[in-house]
Image (cartoon, one colour):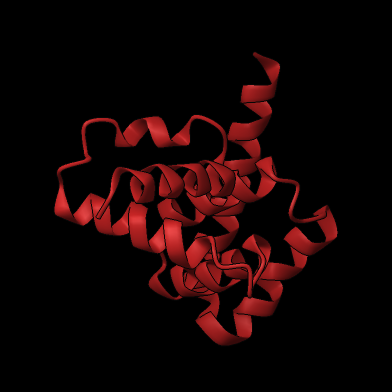
Amino acid sequence: MSENAWNKGLEVFDAVYGDGFSAMMKGQEDNRFSREIIENQFGNLWADEALTVREKRLLVLGATTMLGRQDLIEIQMMGALGNNEFTEEELALIPHFMLFYAGAGNCTSLVRGIEAAKARLAELKKD
């Protein structure tokens, strides 16, 4: 793929997760796995306007909740909170809704991921 596809993917990556988030990809341009993530997953799928970033994020939150991955949930929520995608009321409803689909154990990871992202964002705003 081209440098244009890489750069487009990095722009979308930052739009999804926050300005400067793509800095973690510096030096990864020749890594086949990283190129696929940046150029295809972000440059094509996340960039596709058929679904909004918020809608895509809800899908990812559902999948990561099912995996019980608090770390990935926190990353998604940092992007969502940074982009003002959810109200406090919506943030409270998301784990309540998912409880019936993902189970209490997995939703504990969702609640913890949301709370960790909120705390981390509050700390960043202090600086």
